[in-house]
Amino acid sequence: MIKCTLMLEYENPEKATLVEKSLKPDNEFFIRTRVEGNVVVAEAEAGSISSLLHTIDDFLACLSVAERVGEMKSMKFGEGQ
Image 1 (cartoon, rainbow, N blue to C red):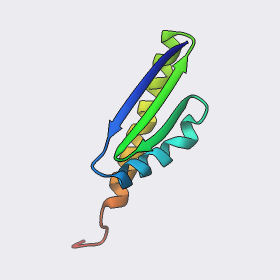
Image 2 (image 1 turned 180 degrees about the vertical axis):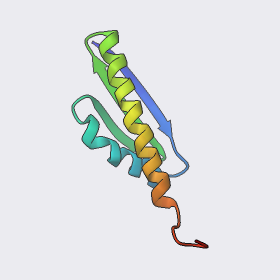
Image 3 (image 1 turned 30 degrees about the vertical axis):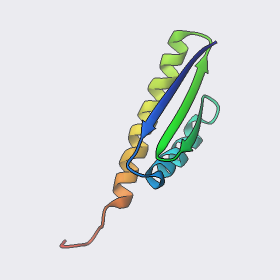
Image 4 (image 1 turned 90 degrees about the vertical axis):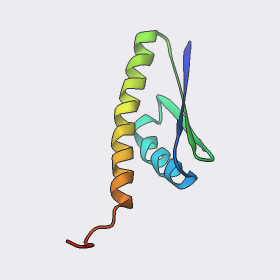
């Protein structure tokens, strides 16, 4: 089994928690995630390097969307518009 751990640091624990909760439904069976302070820890394992790379690639695509959604949630709409 090949294992990989990703540690994603955010500006505060609230942002880390928001991102981690957004990722859970997409990666429940492939990557285990948890929050440690302001860091999201993601652990993956697979039987081959190519399978692990595919899993990480999918995770990073979901992460990109989760981060953009988090940025949108923190915007203030309607001010000056």
